[in-house]
Image (cartoon, rainbow, N blue to C red; front, top):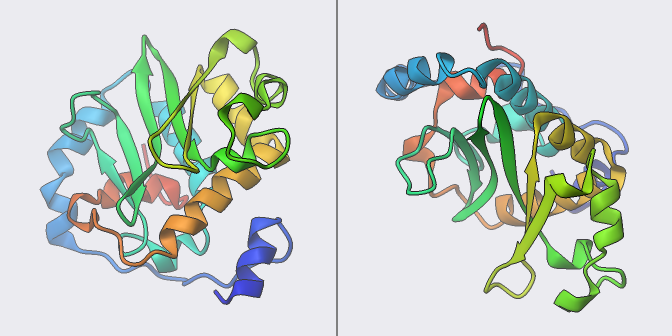
Length: 208
């Protein structure tokens, strides 16, 4: 995608032409098959896959063309915070889903400047009103700051609130802009942990 096409996608105008077929690796798929089977048995699996399908459809540009090499999804990654799945691009985490009882909680990483009242990088300018209106209930929202100058972490509890957040145009644009920033930084550093089985659902091809 050239810069004009990226701008159109960012603003939800027009459609980019994606690949009709995906590149696949049987070896890579089989490597993470046991983890995927374990994920399937989790009570959160149906809602998790539905949210991932939504995220893959609206938050990643040309997702089939860019799969694994510019973004990837890990299944039950072995990190201390115990996520169910994590989406990465370049060297950066984009989106993570966790178990929250039988429901889900999410962590979105976006640019701070997309979530302030004046587009600045000032933490005290965070537009909390906008953020709270983007979820089902204010108590479902929390946020934190990173050491990066323009990085902001949004945490949302409950699958209903996660869906509502992605339905708000300003919030969706923030997610898309951060994703574009890091996909444009070059090849994905997490290719080796990509789960094709989880990605099937993100690309609308999964079968529970």
